[in-house]
Image (tube, rainbow, N blue to C red; front, side):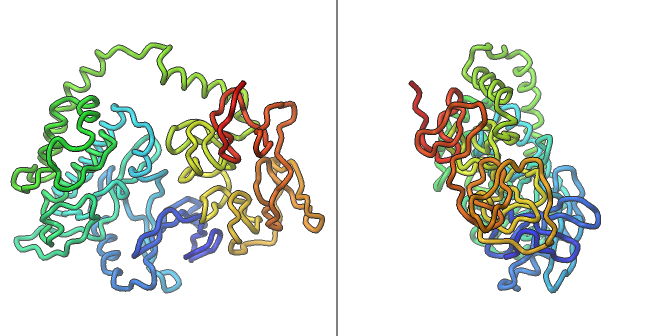
Length: 428
């Protein structure tokens, strides 16, 4: 596994995004073109998978569409096959774990169908449709990736049962993938996105989460998903092209219903939560550096937080872009290029890149280790220079509220949990 700040060719590793049995995906910086990219690097212990990666590059190069992830470069670097791709913000798998409005879900569904319809129109069967293979970009643009198992549809098709078990169609599991197999997998992805539940075998209708699905989308959409995930391939859409035609027809009455819908009252729970978050940001954004959103509840959080103070989610900023130049491969929080250790999670060290020490206006204190005296930023848990644990509680000047457990500063009137030790906050 590559380390943060390690260089491979012209790329400097910033952190790891994901890992599978065949490859690792890293967030990296292209030092020549001055851009951030995603690097997919096959694991050396799995040479048998190299053909799939070569095939993935060739397919992605042929399929040029706004909703299909393009390959920027592919080459051998230091005896490794490296695929450089556009860097998104997160996968659809991560995005659907958080609150998702019906309007945004419909928009993402349309993009997911459009990507697969384009691939099917060019005679390619993806064979591994799942939320992890859809990448979300700024502006909620969705792009389909990972064409390593894609098959070109010919008169005779020989294929293995490649795919992800939770989303695989019955005939694909037996080694006979079809266009309808991708439709089945995409139907399960959309069903999970709208209902919050992933159906399990034997897929007897109504499925788990059907009540929530029916409450969120019109009957026509429910019927479309029911048709997509029929066990008999002949009863499904023949391809995603046909599925896209049906989806577009359903969108027209949905848009009219949206325009006619009365907006929620200002006193509703969602509006009240939004007002609470805005007021918190007005008072405390600069003090706690809450520039990020929680990956589950979307509340304002900081990289330094151990847990979300609103919903108790661990490492609430995981997967977010950091303003710092690198990121820790373990916790994915931002780190500076001159640090020797992660200041947030006790990661044991990084590839040495430079002996230069960079100044930073965020440094406000010094390490209590007499041999170190390194500079510290607020709410660091460990010294990034000597690895000593920070034992003195962090306090905000002029702010009186502290956690009764760890004694670090908190926003007691706003938070439900301590962001530093995860204890529930008790109010008088």
